Structure formats: C-alpha cells, structure tokens
Length: 163
Image (cartoon, rainbow, N blue to C red; front, top):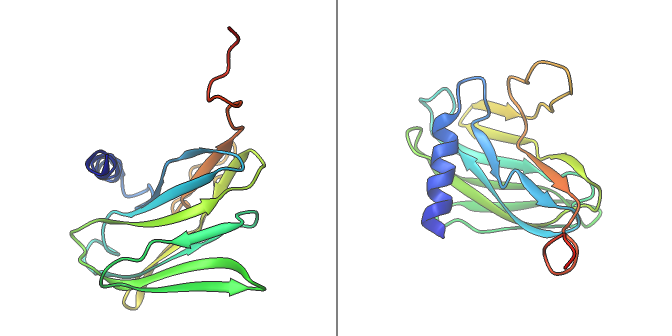
C-alpha cells in the first residue's frame, strides 16, 4: 500500500508542469466531516536548484484536528491560536533533486466544496508560496494552494443504492 501511494505521488509530481503546483495533496477528494490522512508532496526544491529547508502548511478554518506525522531528521512545529492549530511547519533538508511527503491526520469540516491548504516551501532565503486559490472561470493560478474537494459522505454501510 505504501509503495502504491509513493508511486501515485511520484507520478502526480512527474506529470506536473512548471505552471502547476509542486506542493500537492493526496487525496484530492475526501468525505465531509471525516477523519482523513492528507499527504503533502514536495516534488523538488525551489527553482529546481535549492534544497527545501522547510514546509509550512496552513490549516483552514473548520479543520478541527490537525496532527502531523513526525519525520526523522526534521524538526516539527505546531502553530496554535487560541488552542486551535493554524499551521504545521516541518524544518529539515530535502535535496532539490528528490521528493518527499509530509503527512497530517485531519478532521475535515462538514461542508462540501473545495478546501485549500496554503503551503509555503522554503529553500534557505528563497520561498515558493503555493497559496493561490482557484476562482471558477478564471485562469488557473500560477502558484495554486494544495486543495481537497470535500464531498458528502456515503450513507452508512459505504454504498448508495437500494436492495
């Protein structure tokens, strides 16, 4: 299972073009109100030549649980405001020619629709700010925020048809 997730992440990152996000999230769709593991993929360093030294993922309003998975060799910071988690920051070193993923366990909001997790990728003094949200009918953002589309949860039993 881990191998398949890693291959899926690698394929998604390899398919990205320079105008597409190089910080992505998997899955891209999840059930409203669910506990969900989100994997934020970093495809390469800033400008393809500087090592990633930090990744900051902003936690949107309505996400009531945000628990990061520690990464060996990386320092972890949980940013809070009035007890709510507002951001997770991993600090370490990821060479520019490698990719990795950063994992969060979340409790997602009960409202359907897109949910953006703005991300800031630091590479020493340089930054890539993956913080722009898509607007229907407008051109695709140059630096889109990783986004999960929330859909209504399946009825009890996991499928939606009558016998």
